[in-house]
Every structure is written in C-alpha cells, then in structure tokens.
Amino acid sequence: SVTTPSIAGRIPASGLFNYKKSYKCETHEVCSATSYCDTRKYCFPCRFCSRYNDAYDGKCPQKCYEDVSNDPVVTFSSPTTQTIAATNSYLPILWSVNEHVLDYIDFYLLPQNSYQASIIIAERVSSKSGSYFFKIPRGFPEGNYWIAATHTDISTLTVLGSAPTRTTGKFGTLAFKIEHTGCRSHDSCDEGEYCDYNGVCSLCSLCLSERNSFDGECPDFCKSSDSIEVGDVVPPGNEEDHSGTITEFIHPGCPQFDNLEELEESDSLRFADASGSSFPNRMTSRMKRHVETLAALIKGAFGDDAYLLVTSAYIEPPADISDASLHNVGRAI
Image 1 (cartoon, one colour):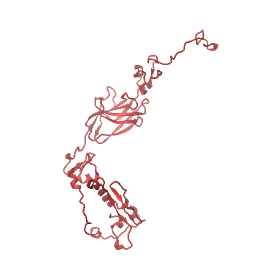
Image 2 (tube, helix red, strand yellow):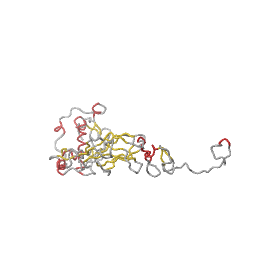
Image 3 (cartoon, rainbow, N blue to C red):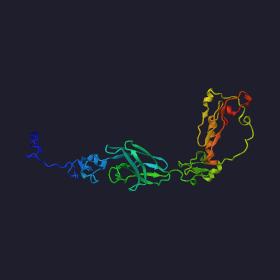
Image 4 (cartoon, one colour):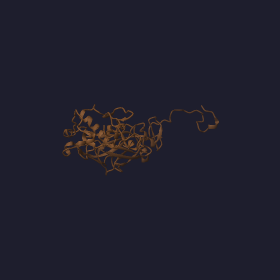
C-alpha cells in the first residue's frame, strides 16, 4: 500500500499493486535485441554470450550472432598454407586475439578436413602471449594438418580460430605440411656412421661421446670403434720424451694462470679436493677438451654408475726445477 502523493500517477489509483520477481528472464525473446538470457536468468549483453558460454539453454540466440564482432576470435599468422614443417624441429605458432577471447586457450593438431585431433599441442596457454613453439615429434606421421584453438575453461571445444587462417568455408579445409627430414634409422646412414637425434648421419666416433643417437642407443657397429681397453700399467716413457723439455712454468697470480680453465663436476666427472698448491679442476683448454671427451665415454664403456675422477691437474711449480712436470703448466692430469 502506497499513499505518498508525490508518486501519484506511477501506481494504481487505489495505492495497491502486485509484486513478483518479473526482472528474471525465462527466454531470450524477453530480453532486448542485443541481450540474451543467461543461466542466472538475467538479461546480459550479447557480446558476453559466446565469451562465457552461459546462455540459460546452452545456446546463444541467433540475434547475438548478427554482429560477428561479439564473437571471440583467434587469428593466426603462422603456420600458413605455404609452411612445410620438419619432424624433430620447432614449428612457430603465432596469433592475435580480439577482446572477447578468454585468458587461456588450448591448441590441437588435426589432419586436414578432419575434426579428430591427432595430438594436443599445448594446454592453458596465455591467449595474449601471441606465440608458441611446438616441437614436432621425430616419428610423427607425414601429412597435411591444421591447428584449432579453443578456450581452456569452456568444455564445448568451440573452435575460435584455425591455422592456416581461413576466410570462408569450414575449419580444417586449409592445411600446412609436415614432412620427415634427414635419416630415420642407423641403416639409412653410410658405413661408419649413425643417425643422431637431429636426423643427421654422424661419424661413429661421436656416438658414445655425444650420446645423441636418435633412439638413445649407439648401434653395435659404432660401439666397437669407441670401446675403451683398460690397462694395468702406465704407458712407457717420460714427459720429456713425449712432450719435450719444459722451459716455462705457470705461477698463480700471473696472466697465464688466469688463462687456465676450470671444469665443473657432473655425474660423469669428479675432482679431488683442491689444496694450497694443487687445483685438480684447473687446466689448459686443450686438456679440458680431452677430459670432457674421456668423461663422456666413461658411462658408455663402463656403465651408468661410472665416472672419471681427476686427482690432480694444475700444481704450482716446485722449488727444485728438476722436479717440474706438465702439471705445472696445466697440461697433465
């Protein structure tokens, strides 16, 4: 009952009216031409219907699609129909989004003219990051493919955009190509070579040292060329016979000492503790290369638990010069 004279004319003359929750919509039609009825039964602007996917009946009304600017859109600039991507390499995926795309999107790789995904490229990628680099698996099937972008947090998997970008027609009609490159097996390489994980035929001498075979295992014909024979005595001869007479020495504090390189420990390389005059991890760059090569071979020859222990490398020159050795210039371990 309302009796205030100041609002007379806005209510029935009797001062009585019926009240009910008529502000809640029941259909899209009761909302304006630019709004829809959402799951809370409120009329909401059409531009949010596809964005939140929250129409009361699960489907945005046709009136909300009359202005395509209301739709979330992902536009790709790469890959294109001219792209030929190699297996075991990175495929750059570049895109831009409009204001209706949510914060996170997913990418799927599908065969041309198919809606059955071959692989999920990435999930929950920031939509505004604009780039992602996909490592194509080495053994991935050759063929023509397209990429679909969908919202991460919407389960309907509505396609927001495709790569290559199409202007008309169905998604997936345009495609880019994936091809195999390089060697695919050790047998496809020449004698004395193996196939590495980059699809390149490399010399067997590198297989155990680099540990980069495409299948993670050096072929048997390479192992024989890289085997290590374990001896029980030091090779005959002395340093002077093999390396010549030492005429110069390196003292800590001089520029040449700073030019010596330090190695870091790893699971295949360890060092004895340094002392006041001995630095087992300090040596010339040439000796460093030899040590690194030997350390890389250790596990392949002796097993995964093996490692190289360097007990001494650079040692300060002795007081008696007749006792000098290649350790005093970092050329021995």
